Length: 548
Image (cartoon, rainbow, N blue to C red; front, side):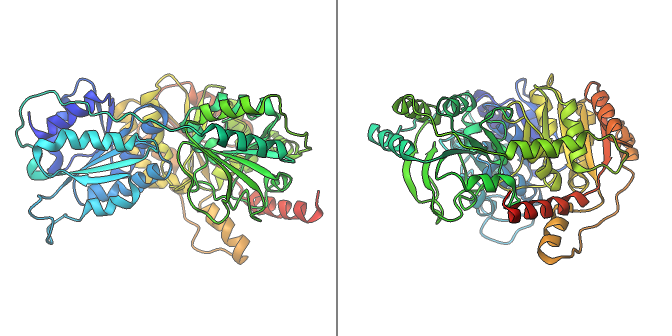
């Protein structure tokens, strides 16, 4: 058995099912060993960044870290954006690349850079193999670090001369380090309960950490038991059913949105599973005058807008249960909130059956009409993300998936490939802007080769609309945000798929419905009129000024 084979055996013993990546001269033995594995499916992508986005979604939707591989130099560097994306979301992945020989790392050498230094700031663990006999221990450590109390990305580099080094043929050990979280003390729980009881109007702000911990039912029960409204980050959307009267929706990038107005009525905030990379506490505590309770599985980051009255670190489900018992029959005082009325009114405009170009609300409405209660959509970064997060009512956490801490573009198409591999019977929709689609459309070839059905909805405006929107709000003009699109229908056909241009809102709904229920690749182009962006900004400004 050689080092490459031992890596594969170690991954098998740890339960890994999928590995994504590209071959290179320096990782040929690892690719060969993975191809021979009876347990692990090797998916060869067409770009290392896309392969690593695929691995990220495995870590997102399963109880296993995703694994991505690359060759040294440019191959490894191509992984960096997606590794950073996963790490910023505290999602477990293991990135494995080749590297030059250990005797060359100190000098200038072809394709050799200090990869461990490159990846150190965007991982929990970054190291290289120093001796062949340490390989199983190194892979186990990468796995354990990726799945620790705060999950994240691990990176390991395998020097090329070691890859085919011979080892004794032995089943690698599992070197487990079970995560053992401390729980808040009884006095800390009592103090938190006293703070809540003394509050005028308490609010829950839930983040992606609560979704990762799988506490949707516990959080919903707690909110209902004590009648506390819940606002969420993008990635925690659906942690409480959005048809629940206590659900206030998502804190999107528009700082003066309706939800920000509602937040001013609350004096105490239970911050549950919020990571500051996704949402700054300045957003829900802008005047630094709110009483804050930190509920998370790890200690809080230091922040000027996050001075705590209570710090409850431990398993969040147990913390909520214990806190609820201490609160007994406490219920928050009723409070009048109009946000759901405002958002319902906005979404209702999307039912209008007009011809293209469509408004963003029409596209959201048509998409919601088609997606069922168990379907999923991966939503890329751009103006469409804001519209989908604000107005698309979801049925469960991760029904809409966003990259928000890093807000990477072009993750949704490769991510959908991974989601379909993991859950082949679930209908999954890719929702992307035309700018993001350009960046990773080559992975259509991966889907075609792997026989993975894809339905891709492209919001088509010929520009980087979110940047244009922000430029026009800040500068009253925009520059460098427009481009010309190719014929997306013919691109779909070139990859053996079907292409469609939605000619009306009803046409969009019909084509979406047909595409999601069949095999193969469908690209649906929805021409969008983004003049609604500034209209919304002006509408919100007028609303705030009028004090409605």
